[in-house]
Length: 110
Image (cartoon, rainbow, N blue to C red):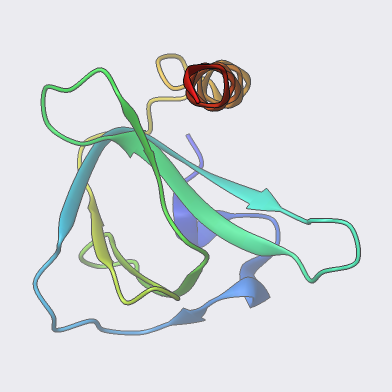
């Protein structure tokens, strides 16, 4: 299993302690790199928060504390990763499909 601090592109975030309490606790999580065209690569967390079936995607994570499993995102959110990575249960393609459907439904409702 790959943990966030063993990720192939470690220079996308700083490693160090984070003392702020988490705003969001993610389980069934995974860490992924995203490189939008013409923009620098970012690293984000994707996972489930509580019992909701909805998938949470973080803003780019800029600092990670590998001891506590806590990351700090560019929007100021502090996120804790709990339990093992859930690569089997969190599917990025399915998440993107769900978000696209949601946007289309909102546009059609107008």
